[in-house]
Amino acid sequence: MSAAPGRDRPPDLAPPGARTPEITMPDVTSLDLARWQFGLTTLMHFAVVGVSIGLVCAVLGMQLQWLRTGDERWLRLTKFYGRAMLIAFAVGVVTGIVQTFQFGMNWAGFSRYVGDVFGAPLALEGLAAFFVESLFLGFWIFGWGRLNPKVHAACLGVVAAAAMLSAYAILVANSWMQAPTGYRIVDGRAELTDLWSVLVNVDTILTTSHVLLSALVTGAVVVLGIAVWHIARGRDADVFALVTRPAAILGLLLALGSAGAGHFQAVVAMERQPLKMAAAEALYSTEKGAGLSIFAIGGLSTDPGPPVIDIRIPYLLSFLEKFDPLAEVKGIDQAQAEAEARYGPGDYTPVVGLMYWSFRAMVGSGMLLIGLFAWATLLSRRRKLTTTPLFLRLAPLAIAIPVVAQAGGWILREGGRQPWAVQGLLRTEDALSTVSATTVGISLVAFLTIYGVVFACAATVLRRELGHGLPPAAADDHDGPDTPRTAPTQALALSY
Image (tube, rainbow, N blue to C red; front, side):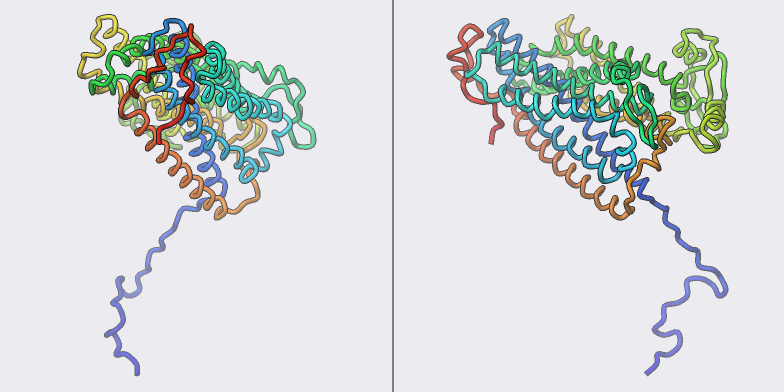
């Protein structure tokens, strides 16, 4: 039995003869997904790396203070912040392993091209991270009361040195991607010809200095923020006050050093990667006496019109780049034309809006940290650091600032190199594996899920371990550096 016309059929939503508009979905390729995967996992990994390097150096300083003074309060601080350090190391290992997987999964072309060059630095990183760090961290965890106190502290010193060496090795490889040197091309792949030039590349030295100083700044912020959080709640204020002044003063000096290293790193990038830095300033036309853009709305697209808002400091960009306020600064249009003349037709300009705002996120966060440490130092000199309500509220929130700064810096460094995987040698699209978008999408969801679970667990454990203040002093915690045989024998472990 047929239905009567118009009774059971839904009414037409469009008038007769009208075309129903087609809904088009963006064409997401395997290259897009692979870049998102590597970018997101790298940002999350390096956020933890900065915390772990910074904390291991901070905890080492606390333990050395205990050895020097015999003050039991430094021992309690060592064990308290040591727990945060162990959690950061654990998360760093888990998130770092995924990076290695992706080279084989998504970037076979890249691995094939750079394998000969990357072999030495990656082997050095593996030796430092997975052998030396793990071994001596185990000695430190289980060596309380079993090792001579000076030997025990030296174990943590080895961990700190190995962590920095591991970071240096990774930055050697990354700096070669930014400024290749010491190689020759044989059968379509790079072969290493001069290891020393790779190890002491100017970009490597400046980047390593900037990254390690930033990691130490992160450690100072974490120590200061956690201490102030407990002081504001009246928990062991006399103990936590011990670390506030050193964290403030050292944090200020380290933040200024990091800013200086970052500036010279940018000066080198202006010569070697002019499109990156021109995009970071949204400078389209070559200018003499170029001003530094502080804030802009509009004018950041591929085909820009005049910006709606553009706040600039006259002549400052020229001065910062060449120490001459009237010097000429190369713009995007000229740098793009030079790239086309060298490499052939194509778009060699990175995403201007992304570069512009990531640069400001990094620099702005750095300025906030310098201001915070300067404020803390001033309050400390006036003996008001632990009694100023506004500072007690803001300092714990500052723990998030280094994460923003590091994310902005890495987005600028890696995004500004595009469309190259290796600057001037290997395009990103040629570095990709023969893999489908579906496969990469599934692995992206899987990795992000795993990372989410790992970070959620880490946050839960951190809150449990650090949220209630220092544990009560044990009777054997009063042993000083002159009584190694009767020092605490309990291994440093998380409470369960």
